[in-house]
Amino acid sequence: MEKVKKILIVEDEIALITALSDKLTNEGYDVIKAMDGKEGLKSAILERPDIVLLDINLPVMDGITMLKELRKDEFGKSVEVVMLTNFNEYKLLADALAQGAHDYIVKSDWKLEDIVKLVSDKLK
Image (cartoon, rainbow, N blue to C red; front, side):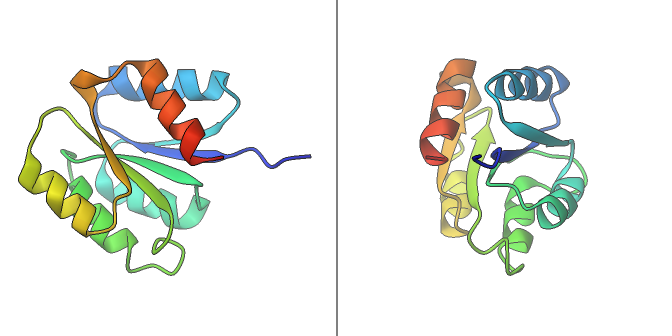
């Protein structure tokens, strides 16, 4: 039997984290949620997800800082990370990609189904 893939969503917009979580859970994934970067970092290291959906603008610890810290951990060096952002801030996205993010999504440009497809494609 195939192991259920685990997804960590680090997002402070309640409507979005709820919608993503519900959709991905319905698709058969095990979803872990965190509302800020510090909580997300702790969850990533403890839970060892297969992929992390990480918002850039977060309270407590922003997504770029969380990514930098995650990459210092043995597990975190290689986990797939997709950055989520509300806007096209290319400097921040370039920084995220330089820190080892695998992809990014501008939230306003994507539908929920597109995010689910991206996740399922990356987890194949």
